[in-house]
Structure formats: structure tokens, C-alpha cells
Image 1 (spheres, helix red, strand yellow):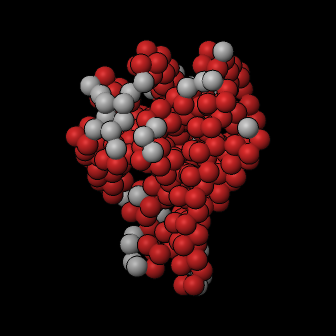
Image 2 (cartoon, rainbow, N blue to C red):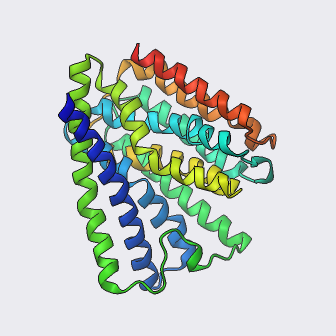
Length: 313
């Protein structure tokens, strides 16, 4: 199993660096082609930072491993709320009371409910996938329209990965590194995870919900920790809400077009509802304007630890 653990670790490292490279290359290419900074922020950056989850789920779908494909997404959404917000809150209070995120949060809840409904109508096939992708397109259109209506100005330099002075060869190098590295990292991670599941005698679904989900959520965790320490609650909360919406609508939408995804019975009985419960845990902090304090953060982490223990034991 040592080699499998090395594969998993190597896959995660490659995915993190390749995802960052893809974002840098895509952002600067888009801006060089004259695409507005606002559009880049809503699309290129959002998609690029979720590229690790995307490649892992697509690879798993192509390999006929729906437990990892679906577990990666469902587990990542649970991790995003309980750990990606819980761990930074231990370091510094996330002042969510200052934010107006009701519209985005409503879309996040609606996405979760739509996904759960389609899972019960599963397996996830091409027509389920198309419904999810249409939902993603509507969400992006709504976000773009509402942002334009409020006339929020966004400077190129404020966009993640943007460098006005980056030369063309470097832009191409970042793009190539990301496009080559992501599938390689996904291969290592999926192969190692499947083998570990077999050795430990646990299901691929459990590995997807825990090991793979936590691993592919590391970029979001790093971003949220940095944002919390800088007092940027909007970045931390927006990172989680945006990622969770794209995970359900975009990643499963694409993976469902690649291959049918049979929904494990365990997921229908437990994991989908844990994901929904984690989503609804944000109600006091989004709708009632409460801050996510250190005590709340510790509570989030404890809830995830209990859930992980139930899965593994």
C-alpha cells in the first residue's frame, strides 16, 4: 500500500500545482484577448480553481468508478463547509455578518436540492447531466447580470493569477503545464485511491467522500485560511459558496456526459443528507448575519470528525 499512498500524495501535489498553473495561464490569456476582467473573474477563475475536482471525477467516470466520481463532489461540498470554513475560523473570526450573500446562498441550496433530486432519479445519465449544466449556465448568466447591474468595478490586477506584464511564452507555458499536469495528477490520485480502498476493505465511495474529497479541497482551504487571516470574509465565504455550486452543477454535469454514474445506496441514505445539512448550517451566518467564530469553527470540525468516523468505522 506504500506505493498507493505515494501515488495519492503525488497526484494531489500535481493537481494543486497544475490547477494553479491553469488559472494563471487562462486568466492572462483571456485578458490578453480582450475579455473583460469581470467576465474572467466569474468564469475562468471559478472553473480553473475547481479543475482538480473536475479531472478526478471525469477520470473516475471514464474508468467506471462512480463512487469516487460522486463521492469526490459530495464529500468536497461537505468538506468545504465544515473544514474549509471551520479551520480558518479557529485562526480568526470570519465576519460573515458584514456580507450580503443571500442570493448566492439561495442558488447554492437550490443546486443541492436539484442534485439530490436527480440522484434519486439516478443513475446520473446524459439527460441528468444536461439539466445540471443548464442550471450552471443560468447561474452564470444571473451572476453576470446582477454584477453588471450593481456596476462593480474590477481591476485586472485584483484577479487571481493576473499579471499585466507576463510575456506570451510564459502564458503558454502555464497553460501547457496545467493542461498536462491535471490529467496526470488525476490518474495518480484515482488509481492510488482505488487500490487503497481495496486493501483496506472499504468502498470506493468512502474513499471518494474522505481522502479524495479532502485532497481536492486543499486549494480552497489554503485560499480561505489566507482570506480569514487578512479579514477578507467575502473571499472565504464566496470561495465556499461558488465552489459548492460549481461542484454540483458543473463537475457532475460534465462527468455525467462522459459516462453513467450509478448512485451508491449509502449515498442516498446518508451522505447526500449530510451534505444538505452542512449546507443548511450556513443559514445563521448568511441569513441571520452571524459571524463564524472560533467556537463555531471548532463545532464544524467536530461535526466533520464524527461524520468521517461513521464512514470509516
